[in-house]
Amino acid sequence: MNKFQQATFPDDEKTKLLEKICPHESVWMNDTYQVIIYDCKKTGMIADGFPDMWWLSIKRIDKQPIRDWVDFQRIKNMLVGAEHEAVELFPAESRLVNTSNQHHLFIFKEKGLHFPFGFNQGRAIANQKDVEAIGAVQRKLR
Image: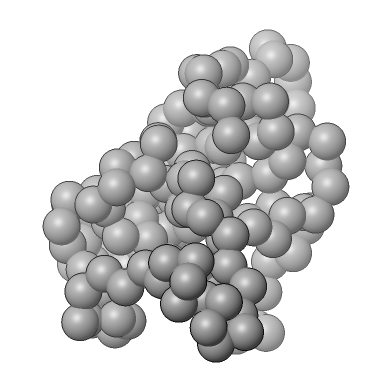
């Protein structure tokens, strides 16, 4: 995956309306992805009293579907930091938003702050020999 460069939106009426509804912090692009970073408090995407978070809106430039965990992990690490924890929410149907081939990560702004769920025993990365021994397939985290 190529490095991201900061980008800007075109100066048109549609973009101005979008920015008024949902002001963004920054826009980043590489050869495959566009990532828009929002402050969750400024956009009303977080409950009062919850830790500060960023919202990353990720889509492919060619608007094709995405489902690549490795790429999402790299995007988070490159744009926010390796020690910031993120989640992707699969909401209740009553809160469902599905308007395009776009994914959303919600990331704690505070480095080292962890969600109260998930793997707590530390890092576990399988080497190729271990993966092959159990008949699994895993590509390297690039």
